Each structure stands twice: as structure tokens, then as C-alpha cells.
Length: 249
Image (cartoon, rainbow, N blue to C red; front, side):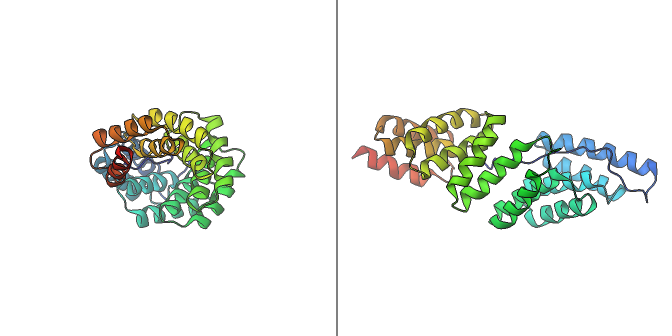
């Protein structure tokens, strides 16, 4: 399951002066309903409401941003990117939309583009969610192999929001890549707990790797067995079984 760091926004101040007040109010209502569906994981209903909102108020940056999110969670990255970029065109200082666009860039392995736009958001001192910017920057640096930068930004994010599943997972993985194995095991243990509500299995696998590197075979085995039991269709199943065979020797 993909765990994602994205921002829903209901910014009622945005609007297009070329449409009438009644249309804007109806668009806002559909956006609010759609955003509610989106936050509850009811994606088809969210898409339906947000498309209605866009038809009524096609230049509203908040609607475009949330419609981008609706496309993103359905795996339609090209459409999501288009909506986020249009939202930014309509509101150049819209840091939420920039953060979300950067996340699309990260998933499409456009790390340089992601880092560039996130550094812009980092400079916005009025933005109320810097931990999300730091987390996305940390992820982009980690996935592009810049582990020291990744550690810096992920640590800054965790100082603000300590129980973030995704951030803790990538921080633990960063420490693992930097051969700080004991710290990695401790952070990934925390990430396992933070990620249980969202059913994100990555920390279990990398926690097992940390314990394996430390020579703590029983703890590594326990993590792998939990992974296979709780996530039988995980992308890590084959690797987990292979590690269990090694541990049995």
C-alpha cells in the first residue's frame, strides 16, 4: 500500500471573477463534499464531486489541487500533474499544490524537478506545514541516493511530527544505508507501530534487514514472519522467504 504525504485543501478564498457567485458557491459545496469523500478513501465519489466542482468553477486553484489528488490516489499521475500545475498557474504561491506536484515528480523519479519545487516551498515562511515539505525533500534525496541530505530533512520533519509513518520509514531506511544499523533498527521499530493503522508493510521488511545486519536473528525472523502473515501479497514476500531460508541455515 502506498503511503502518501499529500495535502487536502479547502481554500474558500480562491475563486474566478468571471463566473457568478451562485456557481462559485455550488462549486465550493461540491469541493467540500468531494474532499470529504477523498479523506475517507471513497475515491469514485470524490472524483465525481470534484469534477462537478471544476465544471462550475474551472479556474479555482483549490478545486484543481484536490482534483489532482483524486487523480493521484487512482494512479493517474499524468492527469494529477496537469491539475497541480494548473492550480499553481492560477495561484503561483500555492505551496500545497507545489508539495503535491513534487510528490508526483518523486513517484515518476523526477527527483531534480521535485527538489527544485520543494526548495521553493521551503522558502515560504507562511506555509503552515513545513514538516510535509521536509519529508518530501528527505524522500527525494533518499531515492536519489543523497543520504546525508535525506537524513537532515527527515530528521527536521520528525522534530515537528514525530509519529509520521512515511517519514519514520524513510528515516530508518536512510540510517540503514548509512550503516548506522542500531539507530536504524530503533527508528524502524517505531515506524512499524506508526504504520500499522495504514497497513504499510515497508518498515517490517527493513526492520528485519536491520536486525539481520546486527546478527539478531530471532528479531529478524519475527519481523519477517509477521510480514508474511499480515501482508501475504506484499512485494517483499519473495525476499522475506529468501531471508527466512538464510536464517534457518
